Image 1 (cartoon, rainbow, N blue to C red):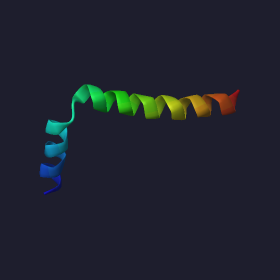
Image 2 (tube, rainbow, N blue to C red; image 1 turned 90 degrees about the vertical axis):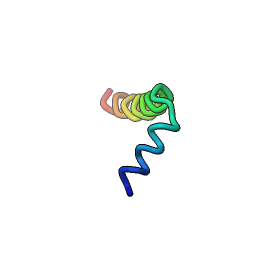
Image 3 (cartoon, rainbow, N blue to C red; image 1 turned 60 degrees about the vertical axis):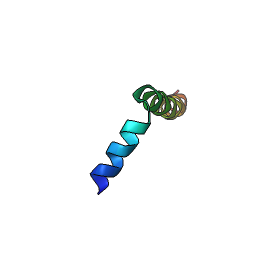
Image 4 (spheres, rainbow, N blue to C red; image 1 turned 135 degrees about the vertical axis):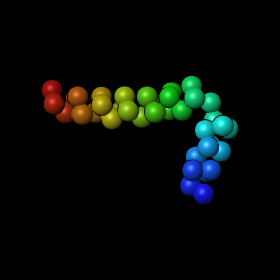
Amino acid sequence: MCLDYWIYIWNNLSIKKMICIFFEIFSKRFFVQYREVF
């Protein structure tokens, strides 16, 4: 059931869009941590 759900999401969302969203969130978190270090 869970697997079918993920397949449904994967088929309906474009891979490019998912990567862009993930990269945006990751870069924001990384930038905040990077600023705290320096």
